[in-house]
Image (cartoon, rainbow, N blue to C red; front, side, top):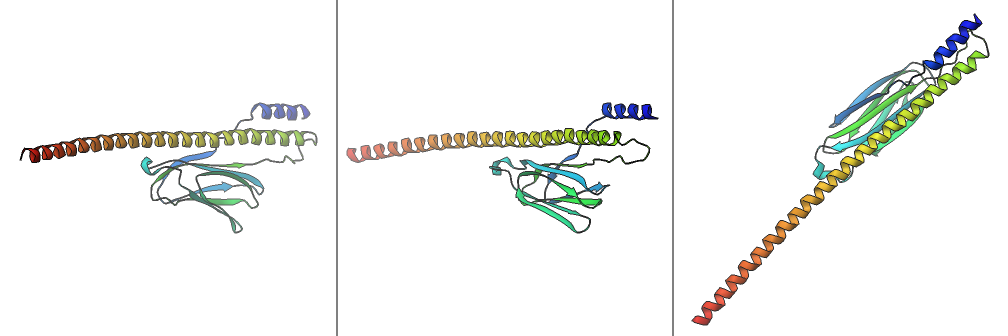
Length: 210
């Protein structure tokens, strides 16, 4: 029996993997809500969102802020207001269904990257296992959660990097358009000046002849 437990322990070590988060990208016009089920009390919930881009880049000098509202069992309520990106984590004191609502405060649609992950660290207290194996199994679960935390952070940073790349590209396009408009305006003013000067000289010439 002891050898079987040790074998199961090593299989658990090699079977560690990082489950993907529930990540979505949604075009947010007004408000969208998502639901996540937490199966155990005390689970750690990771949440992140990033406004990737706006519908009309010409009006997109800076990412517009959105509101995130979280509701859960036992009158749980938490909110983040008017932010273009944020990430947070909290402990679910009660298991059950949690509601995540994203609200767009901009008149334009926004593409939002939204990610939720529920981390659970089980405690193996069954009588069939030896006392010295229980802490090892717990450490394995903690290691799996730590690996996921790194993955979650990378996903959030990637979304922010994409947001900044789109913002820089939009600003560059606006500067190019502005430069073109200024050049066209300058040429138009120059042509108008030449035209007015020619009319002025022609008029003076006619007066001198008279």
